[in-house]
Image 1 (spheres, rainbow, N blue to C red):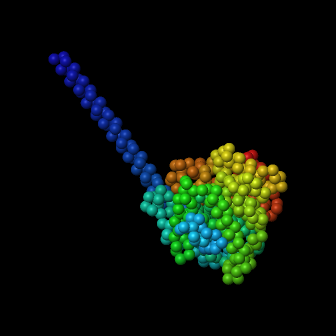
Image 2: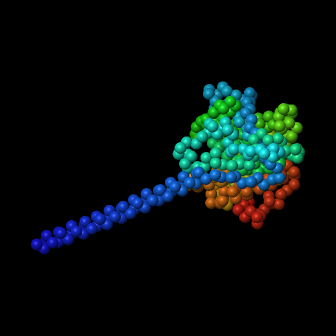
Image 3: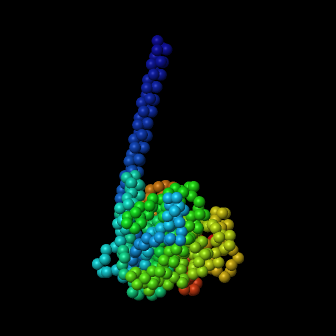
Length: 400
């Protein structure tokens, strides 16, 4: 009888524990479901919020135009069988005098927006371009007050396009610069004349891409754009006729585009200076030194030993050039583009966007870009480039 009572008590205890475990498990599952639901709601709401890009800080309003140029002297190595001439879309931001009732540009031009629509999942985890508001005006007349404006040529990061950097390029244009920004065909999705859509290919943007080959190709793209700039200046039918002086030009870019900009500057006698935003350097500029004014702006943790070695090569033994190396605390690799401003869930989770406020990151970057190019074109040293600034404590001057 005692044995039966003991067994009965034991069974009761086991039953009680099962119920407790089931209850705890139910609470745990419910908590997980609630948290997932809250995360989904947060992502969904965040990705559907309109985003107004920071207002340009210069005195000029900004125009934007798009060109599609074919270089008959080069075959595109990534085209079908490598037998098609290299063709690139170039977006231009410039000081403008838009009509008083002009409507600001969309983030993407209509032909691009039609072909680059986000998929269902992508539109859920990042802000749609249709919700991003820039401050430029498509094909507006060139600003009458902008005389002999400096020319800059820009290259984006691998897989990115010119419009990803609208904030920076609008700001430079508002200060009187004319910025020609390339969209490297096959390394990013592009829309060419007549609505022709050219998708990127893995060997021109993926993990197996030959990065040195791409740097050389993009540097050649930048040289080609410079040659077309010279033609635009003499084309009486073009809005830029008589406004462009390509005898002095600056090159800059982000990531792989920054490496291409340094290489393009090395190869061009008209280069007044080059800026690399967080890009690993290579090729002739590392082995021989750039020999021109140079600025490297890196994210917080970018200066590892290989990068320092590259920079020592770029700035080697030349006391006659202005060489600057700096990092910005709190930044990640994509804080140098608009992607640090609008919602992009995966970039935040992967640490590709840092802890710094996205707008602040671009305010700091753009200020130092202007200081560098103002000094390179005007020949006057900038106090900002001389050392730390109380106004921009995020900036740290580095020794390669």
